[in-house]
Length: 192
Image 1: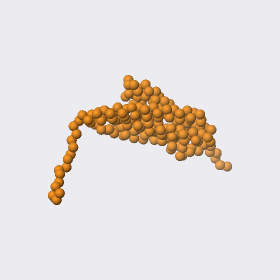
Image 2: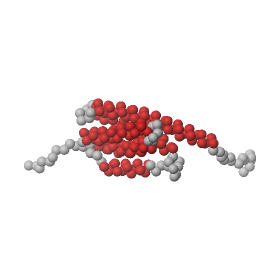
Image 3: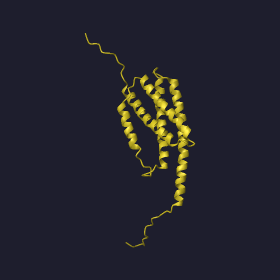
C-alpha cells in the first residue's frame, strides 16, 4: 500500500507570475500616489488625489483577495525587488540636481496613469477568465474596471493640467533668458 499524500490544488504558474507582477506594480503605485497626494495636499487637486490614493489602496487589497480566491501565492521576493527598483527609479533628476523639478510632477502623473491602465488590463483579463471560473466575481471585476477607467480619466486630467502649468512657465522663462547661438565661422569658397 502506498503512503497517502495530501491532495493539494495545483497552483497555476503563469497566473502566479502575472498576478504577482501586478501586485508588485500595485505596491509601487500605492506608494507613489500617496507621495503625490501628500505633495499636493493643500492645493486644488489635493482632495481629489487623497480620494484617488484611498481607491488605489483598496484596489491593491482587491487584487490580494482575488489572488487568495484563486489560490495564487504572494511572492514576497518580487515585492522586495519591486521596492528596490522603485527607489532606484526615484533617482531620476528631471533637470535638477539639488531641488525637486516641476517636471517630476508630470513624470509621476504619467507613471500613475500607466500603472492604472495596466491595472485595468489585469481586471479585463480576469473578467474574461470569470466567464469560466466561478471563483472570480464578475460583477466585482466590472466594478473594479469601471473604477480604473474613472481613475484613468482623473489622472489624465491632472497630468494635462500640470503639464500645461510646467511647460507654459518653462517656455515663458526661455523667452526671458538670453539665447546664445553658436555660429560657425564662414568659409569662403575654395578656402581650405
